[in-house]
Image (cartoon, rainbow, N blue to C red; front, top):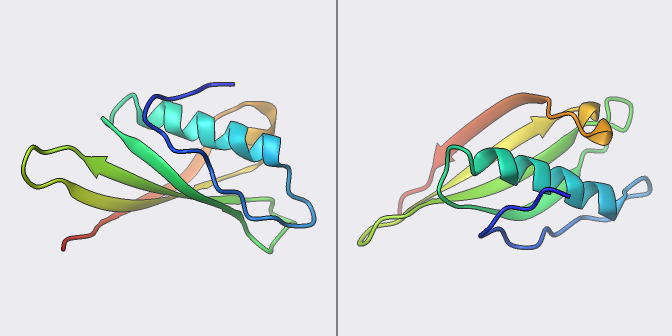
Length: 101
């Protein structure tokens, strides 16, 4: 298990084919990679799509950019494929949208 400092425990949505242990492994892999370039990444939701044929995980990541006076939160979504089940990091897409208050 790869762990990353500063990450909240994942919240896994139940599905007929869900595997909580594997979902946590996926979250740990993603958060570990994010920590290579980002200061803090908090996983707040993990959900599997209804399209079980493609077996894709939609992982929603809240990234906090630390600033002494004005921290700017951003919500990022990453789509990963079945490679995660074999411990291989394969990220197909990665999109971030900053949220300003």
